[in-house]
Image (tube, rainbow, N blue to C red; front, side, top):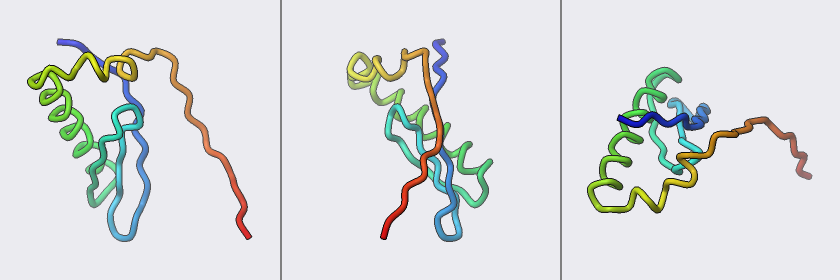
Amino acid sequence: MVRYQLTAVVWEEGEVYVSKCVELEVASCGETPKEALAMLRDAVDLYLENAEAYGMLDEIMGPLQTREKYTTTIEVETT
């Protein structure tokens, strides 16, 4: 078994919370932030299983193996 550390972003959208894995661009949602993350974990697991089954895992290895990750917020202003 191989473990990967991936970046997850969660935000509120209407009445649900959306979660997204930045490296794989996989998304899911839930009624709470905790549920949205659990659903995202399931979606990422399925994504990786399918990538392996179809021989595509090598194509996504770069983002999966990146050790240095930085997250921050930025502020922009529109008129």
